[in-house]
Every structure is written in structure tokens, then in C-alpha cells.
Image (cartoon, rainbow, N blue to C red; front, side, top):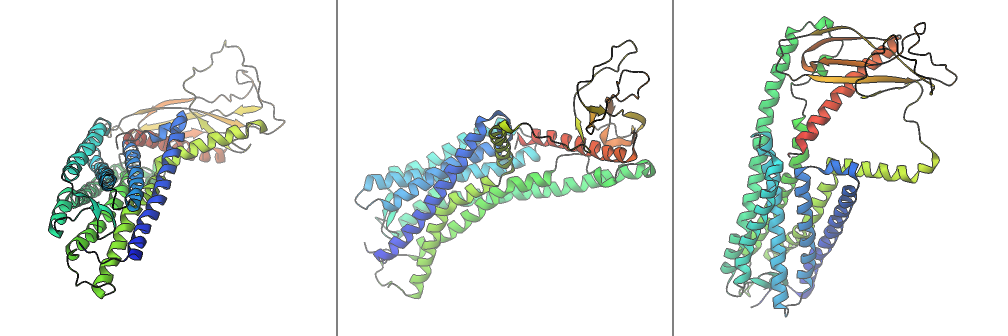
Length: 468
């Protein structure tokens, strides 16, 4: 059996696969190590409580194994037939397992967003199913002796002991067709979610326009754009965040299929009429280099996508802030706000002071601002929207030398701040808050509205993210 690659050309192709695999293995190990460090800290661990991220972690481990076995398959000699076949078996197992895991990410996105399934209940099925399919597809060629030394590429791969057609049949049946199916499946799942999102946003905009047209626009103190749709979950951001993995996987897989099929169909090992450095040879050799680059660079792509995941970024920032606070703990606490800034904090409900209550001693140099709800109008027509209780206290730091008046003293200005009410956010027309200064009033309204809306969106979105 004669191959038409020189030793130098085979070494160049193998070095491309080996170098990209080494870089991919290092990147995957780095992301996995940082993920483990984030998981050790309880507060940063909460950001990784996502079904999609846990699937990504499994896929990164599979790509790490893929990169290690890729390096081994390019360095093993032809005489090591047993190790050569086993390295290809492990490589194909990791390759198929990773591919099916990224397919389940797009599938889970469709099942959760469109059909309302629980992603947490399906998580184990995704992982177990991917392992089972990978075993079913790779055990038959390994048992039949179809994995081993490839004389064309000069490293361990599918063997061609009998003929080119035999190798092509085994490679299509156990690898190519399944990679193509997962790639097209990811496209279908992504398109279904895009179409559903387009219809959902259209209906949401129509619903919002009808509600705003029925309300009295002159009584609104907020901009109409702040209302948004009737659901605070941003599905467009969710889709962009999740769809990066399937789309990148689809691009890499389809390009890999093209190069593998082209090489398998055009190269005949028994044809000695093919001479090096002809036009046909140069095209096939460039495709061979591209194929090796795609297989070796696959872990790099997935590690880069994982590093850009918002869940990973939030967890890393939380962990980094914790480590920096520990390093700088000896310098004393750093104030979060300036004297002129305000801060809202959900301190819960406290009963209003009675006439016979004892005065509260002043142990700090901060004053509080009294907040009164002077007018509140509800639109009862939107009764379907769930009501939420909002409890806030507003503390304003005073400048140095300011004496605080006793909030329990009848002669002093009442400065206790307690705001407790039940409102319907989606149908609220007017919320007037009286403050001593108009500037503080407008800033508090903006801060109150923005902080409450962002907090509610974050809570609902975090609950949603646990499913996807």
C-alpha cells in the first residue's frame, strides 16, 4: 500500500494537529480550573447554577480528552497497532460525546423556551444519552479492527487495509452522518427558537401598545419605554447567549465534514499515478492541513466560547472581588457611596413608631429621609399580572458635623423612612413620592423604579436560567 505524502509533508500535517491540540488542552484545563475555583466559593457558585453551563463543563472535559488523545495519535508509531487503535477509539468517543452535548444545548433551549419543559429534570437524560450514543457508534469499528494506522495521513485514524470504499463506509456510518445530523439539528432548533421569539415579541409589543393607549398618559411619571413587554425576561439576550455554542459547533462540524469527505472520496491509496506537487495533489494536501487544523482547534473554539459565557464571567468577577477584599482587608473598609449619593436597601417591614415608644439613641452620623406615598392609582383591568410587595428603606448619609434629630421626638422633623406597599407594576399609573427636595425626589424615583425593575428581572431571569 503506497501513500503519496513525503515524510516532511506528513510531519507538517501532524505538527499542525499536535500544536492546536496542545493549545486547546491548555485552554480547556484553564477554564475547568477556574470553574472549580468559582465552585468552591459559595457566592460565586450561584452564578454557575445553569443547566447549559453544566453541559458545557462536561463538553470541555471531553474536549480536553480529545486534545490529549489527538496529540498521542500523531506521535504514536505505526508499529504500536494496539495503542494506535485505542487512541483513535478514545478520540472518537470524546469527539462524539462533545458533539451530542452541544446538540442538547440547542435542544434544551427549544424544550424550555417553547414547550415549557424543565431543563433540570432533562439534564441527566442529556448526559446519559450522549454517552450511550457515543459508545454505540464507536464500539463496532473498534471491535472490527477498522481503527488504527492511516497510511495517507501518516498517523492513527481509520484504517484502509482493504480499500478506499471500505474506509469511507465505516467513516460515514460511524462518524460523518451523525456529525451532520447534530449540525442540522442545531440549526433547526435555533431557527425554531428564532421564529418563536419573533412571534412572541410581536404579540408582546401589541399587548403593551393596547395597555398604554387605555391609560392616561398625562399622569405617568415614567417614560413609556420603561414598561417594555408584559414579561420581564429578555428572551433575545437568552437566545444570543445560548445559541453561540450550537452555531459555532455547527460551523466547525460542517466544515470538517466537507474536508473529510473530499479527502476520502478523491484519494486512492492504490493509485500510484498521483504525483506530488501536481494541482490535484496540492488541493488535497491543503484540505488535509485544514482538516487537521479543525480537529485540533476544536477545543480552542469551545474553550473561548466558555470563557465568554456570562455565567462564567459573573462567577469569576464575584470570586475575584472576594479575593481582592481579603487581600485588602487590612486597609479598612472602603465607603461604597459618597455623601451626596443615596442607596436603597430591602430591609424588610418594620411597624411604624407609636406615641409611647422610647426614642432611639443616635449612634451614627447619618440622617434618614421620610418618604410618603401621596397618591397611587391602580389600573384594575390588567389583573392577570402578578402583584409584588416592595419594601424599601432609604438612608441618606449626612456630611461631617451634621447633628441628627431624633426621629421619635415630636418637635423634630419626622425623618424615619419606611415604604411598604403592594403594587401592580405592569398596571401602575402613578406613584408620587414626596421628598423635601425636588432633586432628591426625581433621583429617588428613577433609582426606585430602576432598582426594583432590575431586581425583578434578575430574579425571574435567574430562575429561568436554571432551566436552560
